[in-house]
Amino acid sequence: MSESNFIQITPVMWVPDLDAAIAFFTDLLGFKLGFSGGGYAYVERDSVAVRLMDRSIYADVAPGDRRFAHYIDVRDVDALYAELKPKLDLLPPGDVHGPADKPYGQRELCILAPDGDLVVFGQDIGVD
Image (cartoon, rainbow, N blue to C red; front, side, top):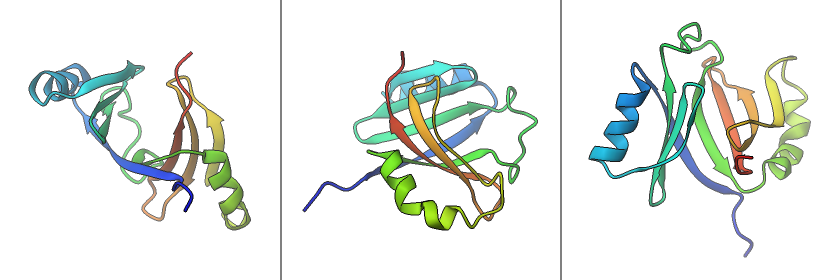
């Protein structure tokens, strides 16, 4: 049996103070900071991770307005895109973005969900 493409789902927490949230997860809960920059941070411990978004920086992005809400880590985002492409092509223009490399070390495929937030499939490509 081949290895599954899906790895984990990580919640996106919209926090009022990014530094305080990072300290909470790292200092109190023992998570490791994987990345921080541009109002975003990624913390992980064992097989669990949380994506933190600074609400004050992204204040103009309201729930249901294309904000990150559901993040699914995969091994090969391009293979997933190829699998889903026939159905994705049926969605309205602008409802799909990617796959695209991001400066925070992820290759992402973003799809607008029925609730107006994004379902994002991401592959770790490392930070340059």
